[in-house]
Length: 163
Image (tube, rainbow, N blue to C red; front, side, top):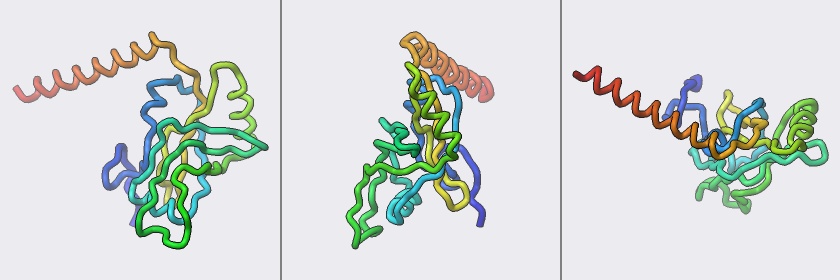
C-alpha cells in the first residue's frame, strides 16, 4: 500500500516532524534533501511520530554533515538490548558538492544551516535542510502581522459563506 502524500500531521501524512520556529526566525535561501543514518529503534519511534526538531542545527565537520540537537523519544517496547540515546548526533547523507556548498555558505556571517522537517519518502526517512539567514526584529513583526491577517481573512470568508 502506497503512503499518501499530504500536508500536516494527519494519519496519511508523510511528515514526521517540522521545525516551525525556523520559518519564523530565518529567511530561507536554499533547501536540500538529505538522508539520515538511524538505528532500528529510532525508525520505530519515528513511525510512531516521536520526533522533535526544535533547537536543532546542522554541523559540517571533516567533510560530513551532522544533525545535532534533534530528539527522538525511544519507545518502551522498541529496544530491550540496546541503550537508547534520544538526543544523539545523527549523520546526514548528502552529496560531496552539497556538503561543500553548505559548509562554505555557513562560514559567511549571518548564515547557518537548519533542518526544516523530517518526512518519509517511500520507506526511507529524509530530512529537509535549508541554508538560512537570520531575520531582524521588524521582519519577524511583519511575518506575524501577515499571519494574523491571513487568519482574520479566513474567518471573514467562513462567516461570509455561512450567511
